Image 1 (cartoon, protein in one colour):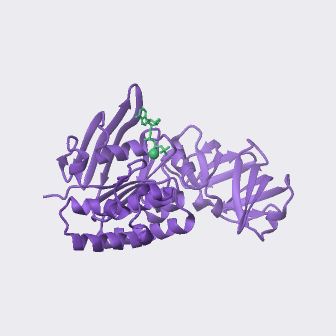
Image 2: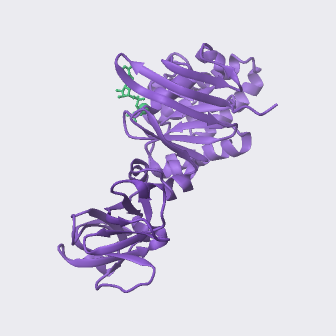
Image 3: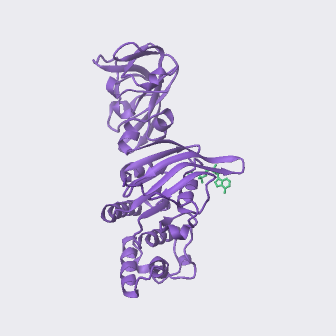
Length: 361
Ligand SMILES: Nc1ncnc2c1ncn2[C@@H]1O[C@H](COP(=O)(O)OP(=O)(O)OP(=O)(O)O)[C@@H](O)[C@H]1O
Ligand SMILES: [Mg+2]
């Protein structure tokens, strides 16, 4: 028999009154994936996670676990580990008892339970606090208790809604490493919501980008970053400079179009059929020149410096194209780069390899 995905969402929709929070979301989640949901505030990430958890009913579609319809299975019977915002700790129990609770209800004996609870509390750095009540901990510490409680029974599937958001950088990196370790060692499937793009790129086997209740793209981090399927995805994850093309010539091996006084080239793609395709390039592929460069196989545009933002190791340059439509661009240069000392209004030239140019609709 064909292996069924661990979780399968088929055309999931959710209406709140007349408002459509989710619109026909379909995705297969395979055993052992680390799937990250990423998208703007209000795009439906929490709603989707709550539906997977069984805390919300969907208005349309079907939800399956290992081929079985679980739409009517209550949350506590789904056996998923969960960390939700506002999914509170038990206030009258100690930290230790909170973390041990999932083991207790599964009938794990006291000795084994204590061992696993202590290990988990050490992992999240709260060993010394085990006897306290939740109200005696800070917000970030409470969040770590919730993570420990979700991980302690080594569930097949973990649903985590921004579990690291209240933590400082060091602790966050420590817990990221711990989540990765658990993912590798136990093979737990993760469905994880974050606003942190670097976290998404670093942890995920796949990223699902949400936009206004729809799935804009689901792919590996590399493909989402290097081959975004549309403008929304391209601009949402990382920085992207976009040049609207006119007078597009679709006939050659390379597509050509005009931007201001420049002629830009790109490998043809489906987006070339659009009325006014955009030529897109990641800033890190661009080189900055003080005079017009002559480089074979590169696109070149001229630009004017509009802003400079010091960021420690690098300086972020704001630029606008010097001819044609004033398209805003950004580019980071090393803090020692001569351009990090240029006056605003300076004229510069930017070049990048044609093969790093993407066409987007
Ligand atoms: N109980 C509710 N009743 C009415 N509308 C709701 C309800 N819960 C969420 N919404 C709306 O549904 C949309 C999606 O909300 P959701 O919480 O899923 O977004 P999100 O992607 O998790 O956002 P954030 O990144 O800010 O957490 C929002 O426009 C929100 O206002
Ligand atoms: Mg949310």
